[in-house]
Length: 472
Image (cartoon, rainbow, N blue to C red; front, side, top):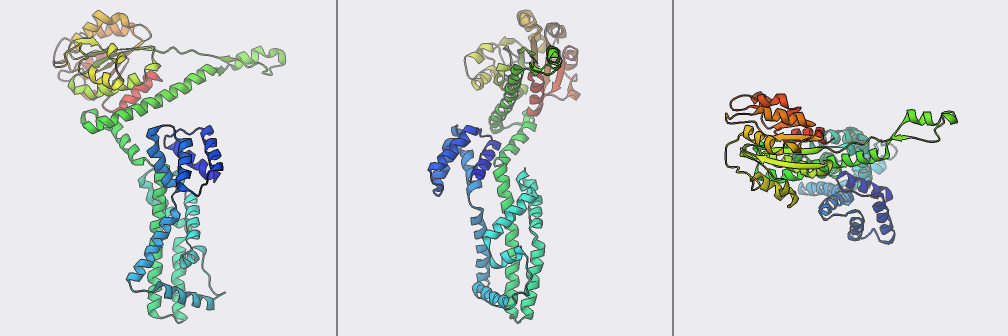
């Protein structure tokens, strides 16, 4: 039981529920005083000790039902259906089995059937369940990751059980029983039963493999949908997908925050300074009685965001702002500016509201600019150069998001040149393909010499890649 509880705890962790060692011990202590025969009580004990957040309960319930519900029950139902089908064909299964048992008794010592064939013939479901589990484990079904692998692992499990060999043995048995005097009708019924059992066993093995997939990756379809969303262009997102994308962005930001947290702990501990350690311990013949660690302090950068909030890039702006403000502890300070033609600072908006509400307000201009106008990048950069250049220093990363469609206005690229000269680096994310840069009213080619990084950013995967390079 302890092994199964540990496996269950690992499945919960794999599904995103954080179960600590202490919580696992709490679960064992609860099970010491509670009866596991009461399923609801057992479930409540595990849920109480292992789940901390309300939104994790549904995941826990799904995995509990998959892991602890009896596969034996589905096996029994499947083979019970074989008997029902035989009855619908006017075949008396009990009489047939009695006839087979009597004839097998007369053939005792002259019968060579494998374990699987015997288990099928006697419908020993406990033994069949054990054989399926053992063969699935040897087939590596525990490593299944997606629906496309269900057929592969099912075939490997069936092959591992020796199902084809068992089928031949049972067919040979039918022939021998016919030769021993069994009536043609009964032999035909036996062959029908063998065929039905083999088909039922194949379905049960596939069902077991699908259960393994659901157990190991219970939210596979949700993960698949999220994976597809990260690849989908911001331009083609529906309202529903925009809502779901917020959760995907949150998860990606959380992953980066976890990496940053691990890195900070590692930096705090320091890295072994081998040369200094050996030099300081020369008096002891080089034996490292005193270990020296070196600490490298990495200062958090400042971030200035210049965000085009015109309708053509609104979705890119929305998710980039959510990304950056989810990671704000990675920066000393974030200042955020929005523009279409005029430019205005919306940093206070993010101080006085939650991130989601602040983003929506920023996309509407934050009460500082008019968003219902035509884009003018040159004017926006000139306003920033005139009023806010002092916000930029050698620790500042300037992150610009926009398509550089300037409506044939003066690009004032020299403003960006001066900004780059003061900044640590200038990063430009453009939702258009590089092949379109510089064509029509695009002035991206004019700004490129004054950027350190310029990337196409039309989906979440590209955005996450750039954020990774800035933060990590």
